[in-house]
Image (cartoon, rainbow, N blue to C red):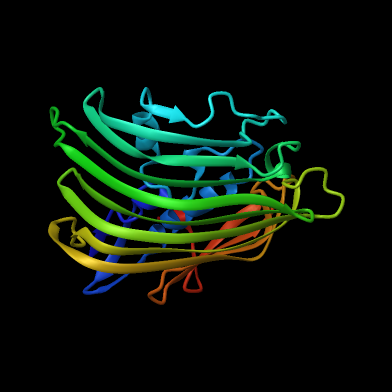
Length: 303
């Protein structure tokens, strides 16, 4: 049995498997797809730039929120202070008050706030640190067109995120929760989610840049509970079912080095899908990354 579109809250949708009331990732290809989404987000946290809504872990509907904000967003400060010129205001709150905004074939409604603060406005980006928070309700609907049925999404969300420098390390934290209700291409779902992210990037002694060479210590979790559409193993649709899904992720002795083609020099990312299945990425600098599901080597190129 396969459950459809469970990871919208992470920024995309994937297919996982279920049997009766239990849920998990029962193939290596599914595990690879889920874990790849998370690793991409975590690695993307480390850029020297101002954070944006689309980069916030766990923010469902970020793209919808940004589109709906066009022409219906107000700022708490007209010309916010930004002494270091890094694009992170000393303090700023963006308020979305958007009703029935039409964009092509879609209509958006959006209400909420997004606050961003620079912890030290004399130092740029990560060196100065920042913190943010958001709360929102969002809806969008797309009318049916030739060959495409109508679709609709409803999101709520709230969360906090921050980055600070502790000694020589860059420390990221995020806690978030929300709900998603959607209908798309004949499928529908209605669920709640919550999660946490904790990542610490520590450069080696003598590294010119914090991201050049060092180690990363990460732990986090995703939890989803609600009704998800499903289909059988042959792809035939079946009645939606309630599922409760928890996934945890951590790093193990993970090091990074920009001279490595894979960026990560050694160590692993480890995903526990909460049903006894564990998926692991193992790095070796310039050599091919190895993948293991429950201790068995998996070769994506052979599938």
